Amino acid sequence: MNEYLQAAIEEAKKGYAAGGIPIGSVLVHQGKIIGRGHNQRVQAGSVVLHGEMDALENAGRQPASVYQQCVLYTTLSPCPMCSGTILLYGIPKVVIGENKTFMGEEDLLRSRGVEVEVVDNAACVQLMQQFIREKPDLWNEDIGV
Image 1 (spheres, rainbow, N blue to C red):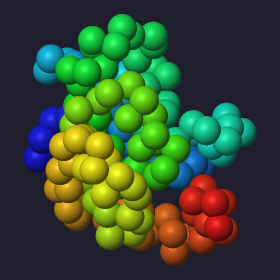
Image 2: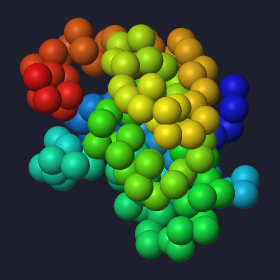
Image 3: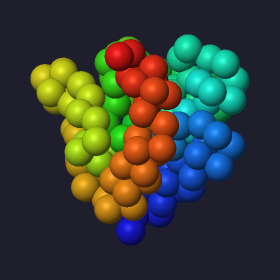
Image 4: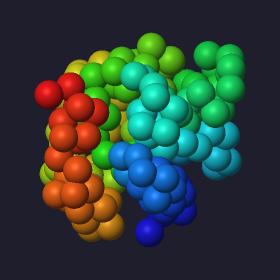
């Protein structure tokens, strides 16, 4: 498995172990992870700290030229908020662990020139399916249902 997707999965597991939603992400620039994070909506009482947003936040402020050379790895297909942030900062490629439990805005990303790669990783699918079975109300809250 790709080391960066593995790092995103590790982030998802951290979030799950802390009672949160198991979605993790890492931002990679020139082969180096510059930001990592996991969904922190529960832990931080945040309305915006999805896994991708947390990874970007933890990368700190970067010049546009850095974002434009990054790859974002995420365990789950990005929602509209996270996809908008990907577009805003010009991140050219997103690698997605899975999109079976949730299909985000992949078509929007592709239509705007972002390279989208879906890996269909079994560990990502299993983790999300387990979480959704255990905490359906929390999952629905996270996706705005």
